[in-house]
Amino acid sequence: MSDETSSRTPAVARPGLARRMGSLSDRALAWVFIGPTIFLLLAINIFPLIWTIRLSLTNYRANRTNADLQWVGLRNYERILTDSDIWNSMQATAHFLIWTLVLQVLIGFALAYLINKKFKGNDLWTTIIVLPMMLSPAVVGNFWTFLYQPQIGLFNYVIAFLSGTDPSSFSMIGDVNLAPWAIVIVDTWMWTPFVMLICLAGLRSIPDSIYEAAECDRASSWRQFWTITIPMALPFLMLAILFRGIENFKMFDLVVQLTGGGPGNVTELTSINLKREAFEKWRTGFASAYAVILFVTVFGLASIYVKALNKVKQR
Amino acid sequence: MMRFVDGLLHLRRGPWEMVATILIALGVFMLMQPFMLWIYSWSFAVTLAGTVMFIIVSHFPE
Image 1 (cartoon, rainbow over the protein chains, first blue to last red):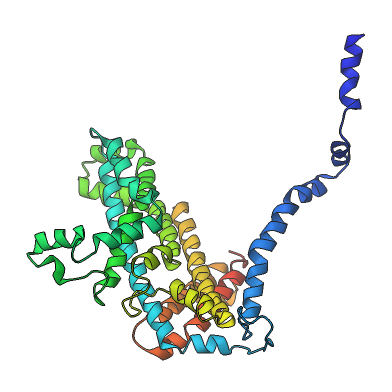
Image 2 (cartoon, each protein chain N blue to C red):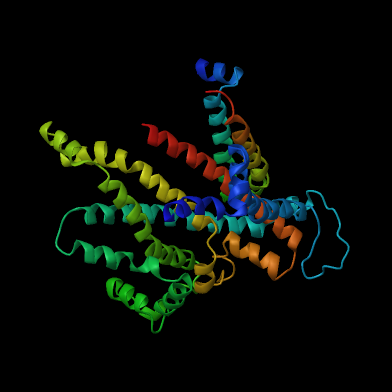
């Protein structure tokens, strides 16, 4: 009796939704699962992009929503691409991008190479090195502002100790020549551990047997480094460059906290300039065109990079 | 070189992707170079052409 009841129960208690789902074809079922994701993607990514492109062709101002919306065609793009201030901002971004990538890759790879060697306290050093990456950019920006203070800043005292100059004779964030380097130093300090972690993953994925075979062939350490370590860690290095390159192209919070784009506009990166156009000058249409230009640039670079990454992985 | 031109004429992905890549790289360099304003002015057109070309040619046969 009890056996009969238990065998019948699942069929009776089968929920209506499950019964209806069971009658759907595989294709329809796939659409049911994928549908919400596609809808969210369209609503959160594609729609704002299309709307931004539309706004970039108008004189829309977000603080005057009742004003007549005029179609200005490509005039916003023309203004941006002939504006020398925006051109300067692009150059500041290029300086920041190139030097942070060079320093982070060199130092990050060197640290990963050292950490990859087995030694006492290896895990402790890894944790200490990774600490800056875990901090908030606002916190980092704030305390580096104190470190860079000419009168009380530790950074100035260290440089003074090493070079023999007066600590208050220079200001890292107040000097037009030094400020671009000040933001490069802080970003390198904060994000080198990230590059190190990716490189470490690459180095640890190289099998020991390859090095052992190279030892048997009497390959020197230098040759092993250039013919085994670098080629096998290259996809990971390229991934790190891609991530940091795109992030630094969009850099905003750290630099705003440190220099606010100053002195003058020497550290006004494109994202800071864009924010000023959009939310201080309220030229929304103009800022939208600016955003489209930056988007196309990052998209183009990312396309090249993904292609290069796939090629390296296939080797 | 002849293989490259042949690939272009027969709409093969490899050479066309190479052209698109060169255009994008050139456009980004033009955008960020500190030498001449007119080069900067043409940067977006070059990058956009390269990016659109890249999207299209990545669907070409190998």
